[in-house]
Image (cartoon, rainbow, N blue to C red):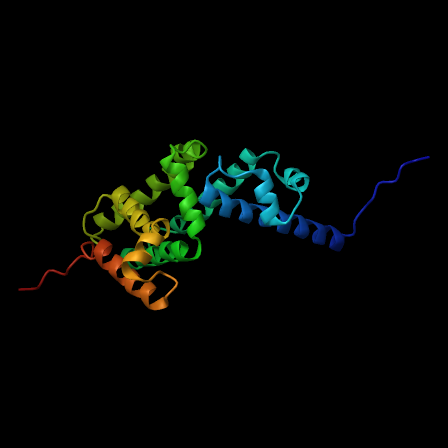
Length: 221
C-alpha cells in the first residue's frame, strides 16, 4: 500500500507557522527573564519550560540545548539593540537625530530592562557568545556611523567630538537606568515608568550629552 503524504492548505500552513513562531517567541521571552535574573549557569531548561508553559521535550524541539537557546536570545537582543543606530545618515540633522536616538534608547531601558541586564551580564563576563558579533558586524556598524558623525562635524553641523565615545556615552547613560534601576529607585524614589520622571531624565541626558555639541552662530560685526 502506498503511503500518502499529508498536505496542508495555504491557510492551514500559515496558521501552523504562526503557532510555531508564537511558541518559539514565548520560550525566548521566558528564557530572557530567567537568564537576565539568574544567568545562564543558574537557569535550567526545566525552569524555562515551566515559565513558558511547555514541556521540556517541546522546548528542545525548538532549541536543541540551553546554550542554543541562549545564543538565539542574545543575538536577537543585539539585533534589536542596534537597529535604531542603523538609520543614521549624513543628510539628517545631527542634533535632532541624536536626540531621537537618546529617546529610543531610554525607552528601551524603560520597556525592556531584562534585555539590557542580560546584555550587560554577557559583556561583563567577556562576551563569550557575542565576541564574534562585536568584532565583526557591530564594529563595522560603529565604523560606518562614526563616519557619519565625522561628516556632520566637518560640515559644521556639530562641534568636534570623538564619535565612538559619543555613542558609548549614549549607551552607558541610557542603559544605566535599566541595569541600575534598583539604585535609581532607592535614591530618587522614582523610575522611568513615571512619565514625568522619564521626560525629566530625557531632558537632563540630552542636555549633558548634546549641550556642548550644538554649534553656535558667530555674531556678525
